[in-house]
Length: 251
Ligand code: AP5
Image 1 (cartoon, rainbow, N blue to C red):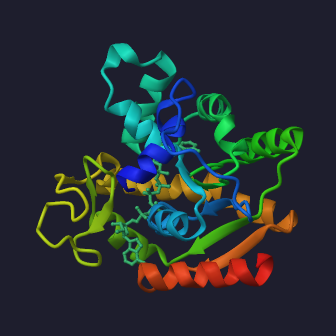
Image 2: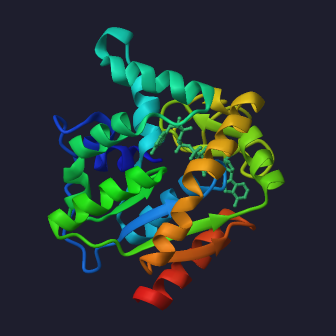
């Protein structure tokens, strides 16, 4: 995620009291996308690429919880403090906390620049709540892109992930290496390994995905919104694949 991207969706990351520095112009096509897929399949990487191509904001619920975990404890509500603990263990944050957080930021869903939701919804109750809110607001989803990859590749992607502590750009130890080891190409920030990328948390996250999130594939298929995309290959190839499928349905 670039500095510019962070400024563009400050209201999402920091909450409704903060205004985005870069106003979203009403685009010709307003893309309202959901990215589905197991942890580590590459949703964040693709959301970043799609943001650059389509202009819609990359809205990640995980990024909001990670931003909360960097605040001092006394600035956090009890629910947000508990959320950071769930995240550290690799468990899903309770639906009530997640929905409260998204509902507070519903202006981001109404934004004329569109959105790319990454990591939300993740359970059927979350998907139902989003559907109801969008219907009440007269908003329609463009598509739900579901990325698919074998579990062994997913584990390799998560184990090697390194993230910039300043601008949040994502790298990989062998597949997306920074020019200088441990240093971000974009802002020279220090790279770190996410706490929930430890093997014991990865196992919990993959189980939570199978149990709670995978049923959303059928939910969105029945609504006629699902587009399935193979997530193997280089990030740019997958990005092109995604854009081609979106164009064939909505060009
Ligand atoms: P969240 O931040 O949403 O994490 P996630 O869904 O587990 O997804 P990841 O960020 O781990 O992976 P990704 O698919 O974005 O992959 P990435 O692009 O980074 O959620 C974190 C936690 O917050 C949850 O566990 C939960 O506790 C909580 N939470 C958040 N939302 C919630 C909700 N709605 N309900 C309840 N709880 C919620 O790529 C991974 C690695 O692979 C990187 O190193 C990348 O460089 C590399 N890579 C990417 N693409 C490629 C490629 N094509 N080839 C080679 N390497 C690649």
